[in-house]
Amino acid sequence: MSGRSRAAVLLAAVMTFGAALVPSAHAAPRVPRTAVLDGVRLELTRARTHHDPALRRALASLTARADAWLGQGPWTVVDKPRPAPGGDVHDYLSQAPYWWPTTTPTAGNPWGCPYVQRDGQRNPEVDAGTDRQDVEKVFDSAYDLSLAWYYTGRRGYAEKAGQILRTWFLDPATRMNPNLDHAQFIPCKYDGRSIGVIDFSQSYTAVLDAQALLATGAPGWTAGDRAAMTGWNKDFLGWLRDSAFGREEGAAANNHGTFYDVQLAALAYATGDTALARRTVLEAGARRIAPQIAADGSQPQELARTRSWHYSTFDLVAYTRLAAIGRHVGVDLWDYRGPDGQSLAGAVRYLLPAATGRAAWPHPELEFRRYAAT
Image (tube, rainbow, N blue to C red):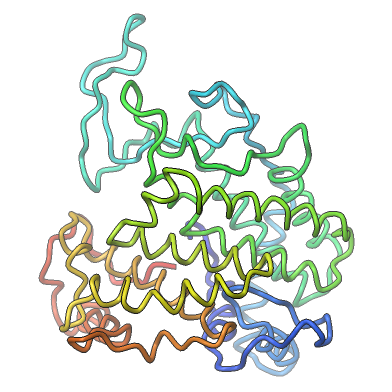
């Protein structure tokens, strides 16, 4: 996720990879029913922050970031300068990042069409005039503020998180329609594309976990808010499963398909469809790991990209989140082995030499940096 704070990552790391399962609906409501984070470890970590210096430093960084969010937003899809191609200002709009104009814009050709693809080279115009940057702020701020409230109990964090979520998703005047029909459009070419689903699938689990945190008793986050967000999430889940774009994205045999499964499983779990969540994670072994990870741990579809290191780590983020969801529904994706020994652990081992500096990354990469995608 863009802009995710080191504090949030450090605290979340403690909570995501724990072996404990989230308890049943009859457990104490103070335990959040998070999709990716481990609710039990969230609670244990909160208690440890009083005595663990490393966690206290991480919490200080997280609250500093939350303090910064207090003076920003809320954001809404209706604020963009022009609506999505369908004409509805409530429809989300983003532009394909790696497509560029071929001519200078004129009065008769305001976009500079036609557009051509330059893989891995981000067109700066995609950050102006669409909803992409604002929705990333919604994802990051809701996550940071909700975590900060959960750990500190400070009312202002919860109230700001609630305001951000209500403005983007719920208030009739400002809400986003639960579809991605116009994500990653290409001027003069496509009004939207299936791969635009990744605008949400790579980060929306942060919003689902934020909602679960707030549902443990955050001030200002009402039963009506919870019900309305569940309704929005159910509608969005239906769009993912039934729309042409959703089905196309689910069929992708690379990081797009993996992140689609993450979003599908997380939404299903968050809205109470545990069977769908479990089935999605369970099928990911044969459907994703076996065909997308080679016996040596490499990810051939990601290595074909001009930013092969980035996309190899990026896809692995999706797998680890999917495995975290699996723990909540009784599926251990880390234990899966494909017919040739393909596994998530193998994919991690393949990246370690370059990640630790022991060896050079032997594949194309426009800008290699030793980092893990978040």
